[in-house]
Length: 514
Image (cartoon, helix red, strand yellow):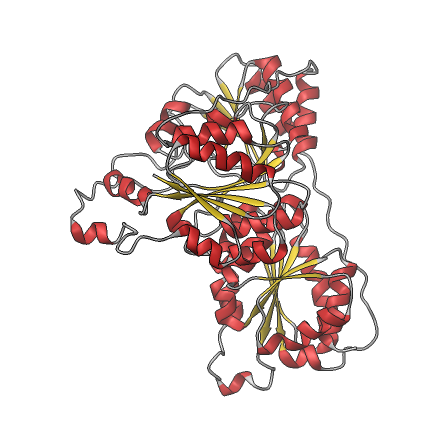
C-alpha cells in the first residue's frame, strides 16, 4: 500500500466520502488510489475556484467536510478566493495539495512554490507530510482539524514521493473530534438580565443559531421578553420561511444599518461579533453599535448554540410557544421586469425545502421581504465577500442534497469568475436553477464609487465598471456547457420560465435582462 492509498483509506474511514478535484502530475498516484479504493465520490471542476467553492457549498449543507484535490502552489492559489469565503462560513474542508517530490523541490522547477505560505491565510491547520508512513496519520489529523468547532480549513500537502512510496499496512483510527460546549453560567445570567431589563435588546446571531430548532428557542425568548432577533448581513446557512421564527438581517448599506440599530441598548452576541460596516467610508463609523449600547458576548461561533439558547430559555422560563411565520407567498407581478417582480416570482414559486444560494449582490438586496413567508428554505450567502462563489456553492449544495431544488441568484460580473461550474452542473445532473442578473456592469461598484466620495465617474472609470462592448450572451454561454437557458425581458416571461425551471429536474439558467 503506497502513501496515496493509505490516505484515501483514512479519509473514507474518517467520514470523508466526496472529493472535489482538479489534479495535475503530482497528484496522479492519488488519482489512481481514488480509482482503486471505493467509498469516495470524485467531482471534477474545471477551475480550482470552482473546486473550493463546491466544497464550501457541500460542507454548509452536510455539516461535515468534503475534500479537495489541488495541484501544487498555483492550483491552490487559484482556489484561495473561495477558501476565503469558506473560512468565513466556518465550513469544514480538507485540502489535499500535491507537491514536487521531496528531493525535487531544491531544483526550483517551474511549478515550485511556497504552498504552506499560500495556505496560511485561509487555513486553520497545515501540514506537509515528510514521508509515506506519515501520510495516513496526517490525514486523520486533517479531518479532526476540519471537524473541530463550527468547521475549519485543513490543508495537507502531499509531496509526490510520499504518495508513491510504500506506507506500510497500519491504518490509523479516526481521531476523535472535541465536542462543542455551551456558554458559561455567568454569561447566561448576564444575557438574561439584559433581556429582562425592559430596555430595547437585540439577540444578534449567526452559525448554528440560524437553524430551525435553535430559532424556535430564540423565538420563545422573544415572546417572553419582547426582544428583537437579528443576523449578520451574510450567513453561511439560514433557515427561513414558513414555520420558522422571523429574524431581521442587518443591511449592507451603512446608513440603513445605523437606522436599524439606532435605539438598541443591549446587543447579545450568539456566534458573531458586533455589527460592523463591510468597508470604511469617509464620515461614517466602522462599528455600527450605537452610543450607549452595551454588547454582551453570550457564545462564540464554536459553542453549541442550541444548548446555549436552551439554557437561556430555562433561565428566563421562556417556555411558551413562539410566533412563527405563516405560509403566505407573494402575488406575481406583471409588466416591466423589475427586481421586485423577480423577488415576487422567487417567493411565489420557491418549492418546499429549496436551497437558495445568493450572490445577486446589488439586485438581490430587496429579496428578503418577498421570501419571508415563502415555503421553508435554506439561504446561503456570500460570507467572505469574494465574488465567484454563487455558481460553485450552488453546485456543491446540489451534490450534497440531490433531493432538494437549488436556486442560485447570481450577478453577471460575479458569474464570470467561476462560469465553469455550469459544466460541472451539467455533467453531474445537478438540480440547480440559476437566475442570472444581466445588468451589464459591476453595478455595486458604481454605488460604492459614490459612497466613498470619489466623485462623478468619467469614461475611463466607467470602462472599469461596465460589462459591455461586447455584451455577454448568457444563453449561449450556458448552452455551450450543457445547461439549457432562456432569456426573460418582462415579468410575464420570467414568471413562466421560473415556474417551468422549478418544475423540471436538472440544471437550468434564466437570463434576466435588467
